[in-house]
Image 1: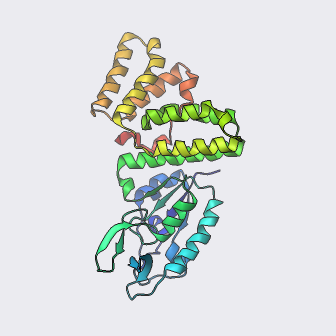
Image 2: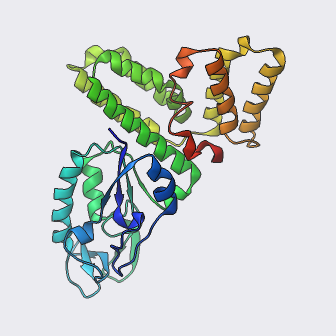
Image 3: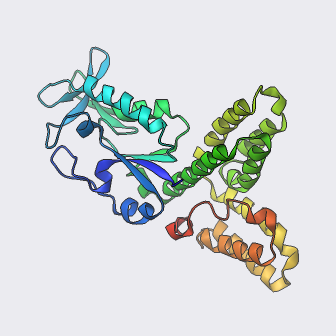
Length: 314
């Protein structure tokens, strides 16, 4: 099963914009696209509005938010009907993430302009399709293309996408309490980088499975908490703590000079003098050299394809 990510069609270069243009994102198409299968959607075109077309904007009318063209034609019901139908098919598509077009009245995830009765616009809206998508699939990693220009946001999102993909594989292989524990063990250090307290909460949840009537209920509770932890952007302090923990597994197998060098690289990362990839690559090497199975299974060392080079910018 491929890693499937839903995406606003214009970001792939499809000419579906109101003016017949596109908003191709080269990084998504040329880099991320090598490792995922895109599921493109353009709500406005697929709802039958065509291209080119009148521009639309979210507008507050009698307390309700409507999608109106510049000439006042109300397209809300048309786009909302499409959104509800399309989201139903996406629920069956086994997506691992979704990337939306920012500020779009149909696809914008947040801060979409909403025109007020007095004429001013407040950036507090969410696109009609985006709202339906996020309500129907609350555990799905969702981001906007502009926010992905931030290296920390980009790394966090891609990490969550591959966590979701591994979760789908777990479900496909047969969800058991034992397999759920294995998933948690593999993600222990990556979770710690996001939140140490959150990692402890997940551990306590799994330690008392008898509180849940079925494995499915336990898994649902775990997944909800897991996603809340993963949404938190990892801090440099937490990364340093994780690196030091993992170094503890290899330090007694290293000579004094090599041990000092590993410690120095971790400290330089902590002081923002080196990117995260440097100590991570060192740990990968020693874990492989000494065949430390527990750490080989840790997704912290391999959260996503290394060719994406996301750790090089942290």
